Length: 179
View: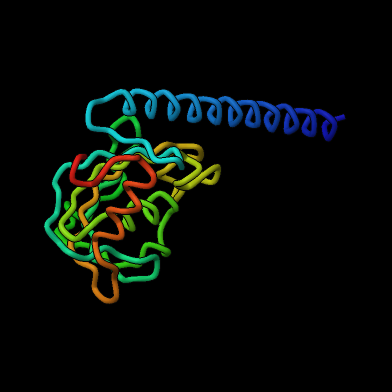
């Protein structure tokens, strides 16, 4: 009898935990969608076909943009929709180095559109970030993310910034110079 009661209690707790997890999934999906919709309505924010949004904070003067496998030096700060910072190379005082194909999909796309010196704020839907899994116990599943990112340098390789400008023109129907 005791074993049956214990099993019933465990089943009830698992059911409650599953329901709570489902509620949190809905919450983060809803919060992310609302956050992105609000950002999209702001002046100077552009939406790419992938669903990612960006705002140019400072235009760089560099002549080089990275290709997907070109190592880059980048400063960044990542925040959740509630404004909580989860990572910042700015605060550490040391930029990070990686190629666009070594990071989340939103970063991969954004970096290849940037030129050296650009500082952008990107608003990334969960599908282009960490998806359902989240990351590191700090970023919940289904969370939309904001990154302030500055492309300091393409360390090797690269392409002419004009190629990134052409990609922006193709995706947005607007020239980089007009953004």
